[in-house]
Image (cartoon, rainbow, N blue to C red):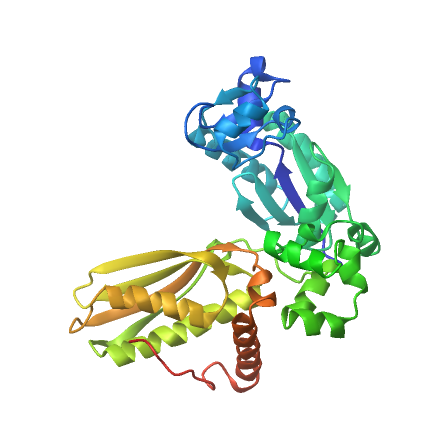
Length: 384
């Protein structure tokens, strides 16, 4: 049975909320963020401002130079959060399978809801109508057989768009789009693909997989699968979609650092495996320690680029562990987690030979553990 996935993306969310609440702003280039003459960035902007080249994350001073007639508004995050909750409640009336992606985006699996509310197109229309009626805002909705294509569809006809991509036409629709539209392809990857003559998604679709593997290693199959509109990720409805972690409580409180490091490595292996299974990468690594007296602490570090590599997780978690100087202290519990999850940065595997070798090793270990059991293959601990 073909899945029916909807991606709901609110249109210029912050700016639209401000325009809704202040009719004097309607039709004007609204820029939400820092003031025009102070150091800061644009959080969001209306479509009227975008016509001048203004976009989110741009320095506010640059936005002012591009659009001096813009109306600068300080963000009200509490208000936006309240509206976001209202939107999520609306979405939840159509299916229990709602995965918030951000404050203004969510993905829904409505496969099981079609018998109640009608087909996916009917549901999408009703969602748009309810959001407009209850919140006074517009949303763009993409309908597709999977999450990646639904997200892409929601971006094609903004604002107030409604785009359907089917199993039968997805390859044709994806083909002319730039390679940057592929989930996980950033600027570095885009430039590298351009150097190889791959400018459109269709170029990747047509390249023989053997040649892709020669050029891109283990990520070739993933890259071409996305180019062909294939994505088997499920819609996640719980907190695990926001973080992946592993914890262990020792049978007996221990001060044995070798035992603690061994446990930490096994946890990082578990988290790395689950990240790869979820096709996600973590921007932040978290270490959790609970001592014998039940004192609990957490330490976090944000990475320069997201990872799903267990040894990278182990290296960072190990640094956090060493920094705590636990020598002699008895530990009751240790945990490690990856959070701030994003799409894996394809370039981290494609163009770095060390990353490529580590990725091949991780994949081989995943396969062996799948056949022999999770505890069958162990790495050696190397933390100092």
